[in-house]
Image 1 (cartoon, helix red, strand yellow):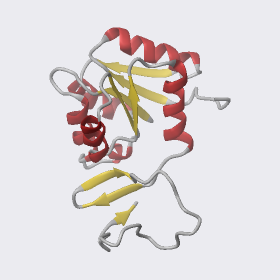
Image 2 (cartoon, rainbow, N blue to C red):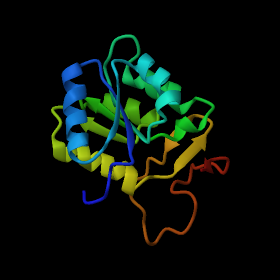
Image 3 (cartoon, one colour):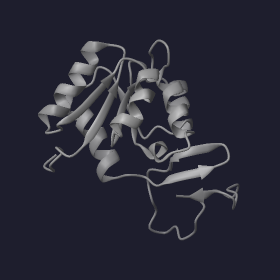
Image 4 (cartoon, one colour):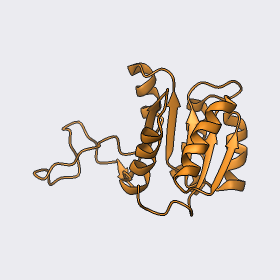
Length: 168
């Protein structure tokens, strides 16, 4: 990335101190100057109001409060922080885990072992190619559709889409 990342304010939530260091070191090396760390989802939630991060990296599996519980609490919080992009880290990339995170509103998914390239690619995706947020009775989070079609002109992609979905 050739863009100045120094203004970014990032929160890294992982119970593994070594993983926090790896992700933080990569981000610092790319120019991020405001890095904050939390050892679990509860501490991460406590940090949100104080830190006001632009992006959160969160581990899937942690004691006390895991990444899914953190994500659910974040997305259903009443404040503006619910729009914060979340990149989830995991050592397991099976479809049930991917779907669970997607269904709770994760922006990006990053499988361990991570590389500097993949960390920065996911960060670039949420910053430079953000997806609009969708507010639906059973879902709040980024639009799950990643591709747009030049031939599609309407607001819905499926015949079963309901008109009470609100894009934000």
